[in-house]
View 1 (cartoon, rainbow, N blue to C red):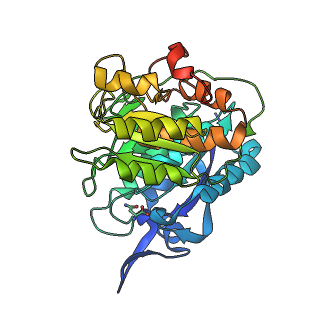
View 2 (spheres, rainbow, N blue to C red):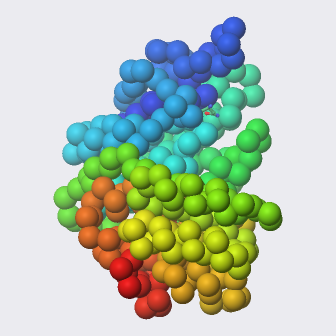
View 3 (cartoon, rainbow, N blue to C red):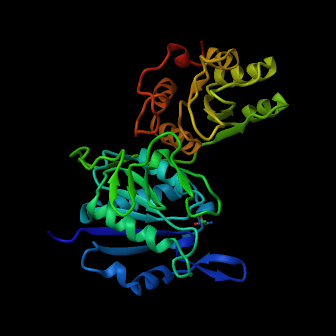
Length: 350
Ligand SMILES: NC(=O)C[C@H](N)C(=O)O
């Protein structure tokens, strides 16, 4: 069997960084040179690969939607020439990019795996070598045709992943969906599928920056804070509520949200809990939100909710289409399928 060909897009992040007086910084050429010197990467069993280094290399904390667009277009322009794609990326916003790319790639039928490391590849005890080596191996021999995130021996669905540990090697989790694959002594497929999705042509939906508010509720929060936020020219507001989607039964807060929804702001309710799902029918405190037209974010991560909003607000101009698709399962990002209660579709003018 001919060796698979993999395109590595090195965008930046710790994996290729070098120590400087200001701390770790990305250094052009350094990752490519390091990989060239590591014999495991060039064994006969490994796929062939090319490394394309971005200019400038970025710490992922500096990334913006324009960078998601750049990565998507880079993969699109190399799509026909490679069997799979590995994106080397900083860990800080890796889950945002993974979610964004999941939505932007429509009809993806090749693997796109995002990975990186907590310690630079060229540093002793780095997790970069195993992460990159396994990502390449899995892309070649266990091709799962979706956007995924590989870290610390697990492959996650991109639209389900979240950064879960700031300084540990087990830095990512997928709290509401099982890992697609686990790499132990054996490589074990769990929730992933090796069957091809489509034979359609890849379509990349562009995203443009969108003004989106994100608010975490906390006991004693002054509703004037929400009121002042919804006075801003925002198109959507992600409310990180308590438990299964509850907010205080404070009439000033409900009135602010109601006013925003009337003005066309899409308000989506995600839980601030690490795991679990929103169910606004559960308590009166959640019901009050559903009644005014707040949309359930179900069990989406905040990364998925934010990037899905970018995707939908860039693609659609009709607000009821946006509201409907937010509750639908587009890329495996939420557990509930298209079934939605009519109340969550109350249009802003009603
Ligand atoms: N481990 C890392 O890659 C963190 C780095 N600040 C980044 O996100 O680019």
